[in-house]
Image (cartoon, rainbow, N blue to C red; front, side, top):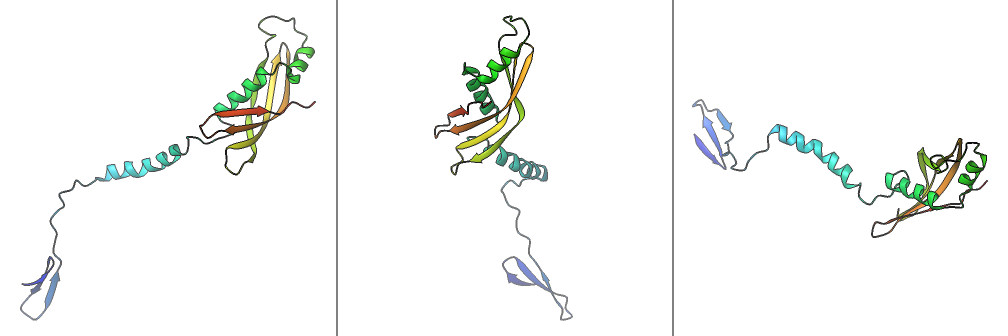
Length: 160
């Protein structure tokens, strides 16, 4: 046996043939991660990436934006869509049916986005029920998120 240095050795079988044997290193004292742990780590990485992008991202169709749009429309006492539905209703006014019930459509789309992605122009359907009448219209609105994360919504007036 001839030492080749750096953990390897040369062996001779006496017939002139030299065999090379690679040396084995001592096992590391660091804890090795097992296969199930690696798999869990590998599979959880995409989830973390997706969740990290959920913070201050502004979307037309988010629950927060939808609530703000409905609140802005409900607060407008000169809303022509409600006035139309109330005028066309033939039901006898009661406290239960005289209050307008608003509903945004399932699909709210982004029509334009500002360069800094903090202002969106959005469009979607809205319905209001008053008494026995349901009136629907397309609603256009602007959603803007300030640097401190506050959302503001402005709704374009309904055109009839």
